Length: 60
Image (tube, rainbow, N blue to C red; front, top):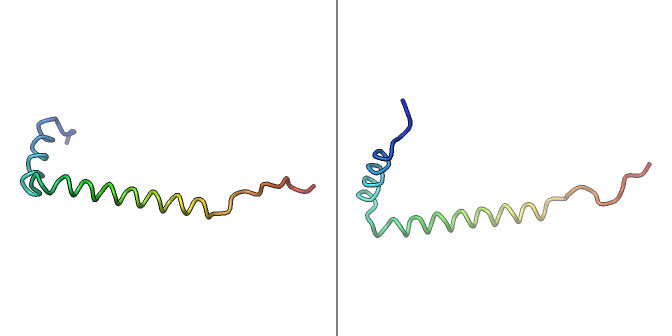
């Protein structure tokens, strides 16, 4: 079971184009990109609200 060759990827791309159609594919990719951006934005919000390490030096 080796890796996929370039011919396999061409066949997969052809099947995807037949199933989704050429018009729906860019819209689907745009929706995916919007979802990824929203996910990253929410992750960065969580990072800002988490308390970080204390900025004061430890007392001896």
